[in-house]
Image (cartoon, rainbow, N blue to C red; front, side):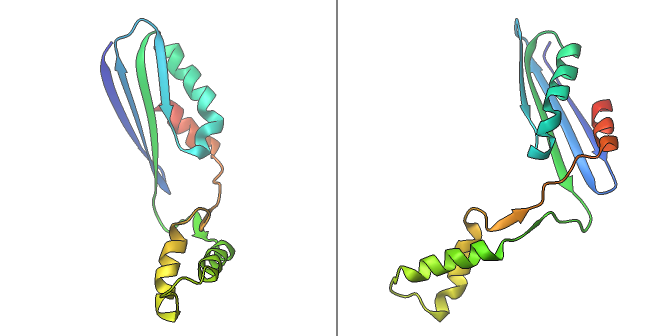
Length: 132
């Protein structure tokens, strides 16, 4: 019951890679690694896998790579400005106009500096994933 499988789906605006690994075990122990936008379909995926596999330690991974010009992330300007203002308010030495670039670099690494739009799952896309 040891095995590995990989499937790659090329859709118009993204590439989806599905991997499944299994090791011998008495019971079914299913671990999933999927992007957050697919969490609502996790139970369906788990049921599909568990109906096909009765036992084993199984790792299921789903990876999504966006292709094309579509971008779902943008700068959260208000959060970045707020972070920079808070750092400037600390009145640390060497904080001045020449260090604004460094402050921006730091602020962009902080939580919520980027907004991501939650992408809805297309049912035809999910049907292709189920086939794979």
